[in-house]
Amino acid sequence: MNVGVIQFPGSNDELDAVWAVRHLGGEAQLVWHGASSLGDVDAVVLPGGFSYGDYLRCGAIARFAKVMPAVVDFARSGGPVLGICNGFQILCEAGLLPGALVRNEGLKFVCRPQPIRVERSISSLVDAGEGEVLVIPVKHGDGRYVAGAELLRLLGAEGQVVFRYCDAQGRSTDDANPNGATGGIAGVCNEAGNVLGMMPHPEHAVDASVGFHSADGAAVIGGLLKRAVRA
Image (cartoon, rainbow, N blue to C red; front, side):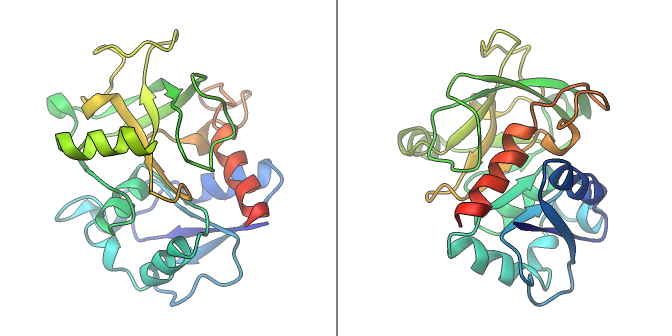
């Protein structure tokens, strides 16, 4: 399986994503934002960072990058797509995921290991069971997921909420929510389950011997690789 990692001006986690994929046994290549096609890829990752300097609004300019029509076509044809942090913002701006991401509550940048609870969802990109708690780092200033009451109802009813922030015991509390996200939502998927956006960074947590000393991100990166094989 070959994963294409989109590289935008301002991306800063693209090499981490490439490394994480290779560490878990996959192949990965960078795809430049100015490319008109994705090439021969089985899955796509939109990495974290500050695409185009986060001018206007996070992800708002990247949504118009030359490569994005190919990403949209790939996603709508059922290909597995993972958007991490800034990548999540871009997917929302591109209309591939519902809702929006805005400034953190309190207007403070957060960076910490963060427990998230796996929800019962239709996502095919997560290799973990419902209720399982994963510890995956967050590092963002514009990560507060917001959605109106009707959209929240639909997301819950359709199984599109994939992750919620929680404490180490899996409980949803205000203290466990790092950015004030509505409903503690940390990640959502599209109606088909093949596109996943999340604020935590699984690429920084696939080897417990380095970084944040957690390998729980392998449940996401490894899940993407499994989905790529099935695709």
